[in-house]
Length: 254
Image (tube, rainbow, N blue to C red; front, side):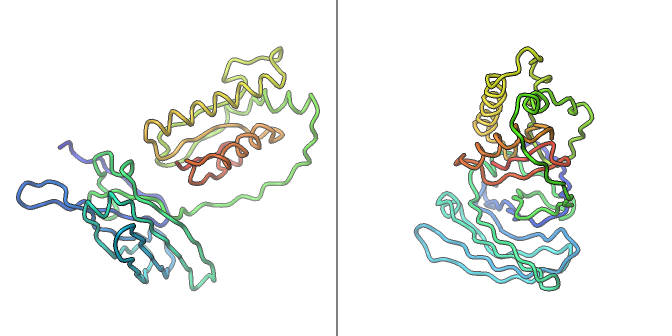
């Protein structure tokens, strides 16, 4: 087996799946599950595990900042039944809560588990909640006219944008100039071309088993971004998506 690569987790809350092995032949027997609170806040977490053919499990966890706790273990049969985890997170001191549903799948464990630097152990991790610094973005009035479409399609801010997204395995820039489009191509057909290229790139990312995909659409008037988001909302294999890079890109979780 190849040596595990090191991984430093960004601020957030993670499901940790530590592989367990049989002592006789060192083959995989299952996974030890835990939650890692990689933030400074105290958390109260309620977990419900729903299996297709066995009794459900419920767990209550209290985690201090930068603490992790084990809560269950899956053998391989349970894992292949694709259990669903319903996770409720509460921040008692901030009177805030968050809910997420997770289904660990084969794609989450398809590679050699990285060495999680903070935990000093090799394990798979799935992001539950990520700490994001929110920025206030002024709303712009949307006026649909040819000049605004021209600005959206030929947005030339891409050269100054900085991508700082951890663990994003693939990205795609669909600015008109990055795709070889020019002012003579400005039409509804050019917009369709950009969106078609984006959909093909997302399909490739899904087919390759990637966990995330970054599309750079720029800010402009928001026409391209709105069309990208409209397609993502209808996509059955997109778990969630969020704006980043000061609204110039969208991070898609598959």
